[in-house]
Length: 234
Image 1 (cartoon, one colour):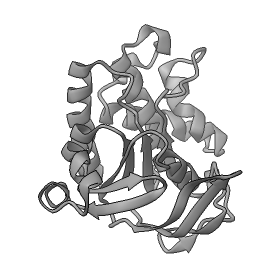
Image 2 (cartoon, helix red, strand yellow):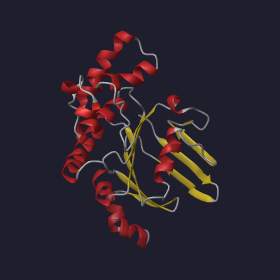
Image 3 (cartoon, rainbow, N blue to C red):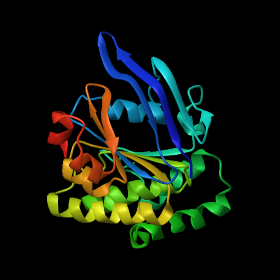
Image 4 (cartoon, rainbow, N blue to C red):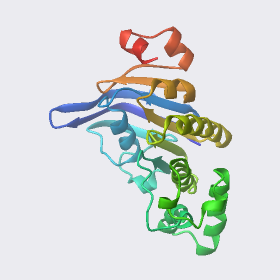
């Protein structure tokens, strides 16, 4: 486990300030939700933590170490995208095993790690199938298992439930919360869904126009909103 610290981070694309001087510190093992409308900078911030985008200004620290100069593979993070990004020509087993092979793990150790990750999400019986033969919920579990198999210090989730229907989304949300609490990995989750944020987060950072307007527990955000925008988000 590890904390994530964001120090005065800014990201500018041409004339657009996507992230405007954000300071943020997670707690070790917490589930932090970044909540805000499309274009508020939440996904850009997540991608900078992961190392897929370079900040214009500021620093990112994971476990107290500055990450700015490190590529994504060296940050000990795992990220799940909205699209899941599974390899369609690979079986579930090969999808989960891929990051282990990429980091050079000994071949003899890989089956045990894959089975461990698959068992956490109840998909051990799906290992021989390909993504096209899976439901939306099953593909989500495969993406989570593939992210977790490397045992990251930080889990980054970019609207991973948005492609599911309403009923499946509610059950998947509950499963994700229970899983995160069981393993205790520091998790940062991006969403524009107020209900999702209030139901999942230990704390919520409400964002607008590249800035954090308020951070607090769901109860604090609901009972004591900092302004009218935050009140409308809870």
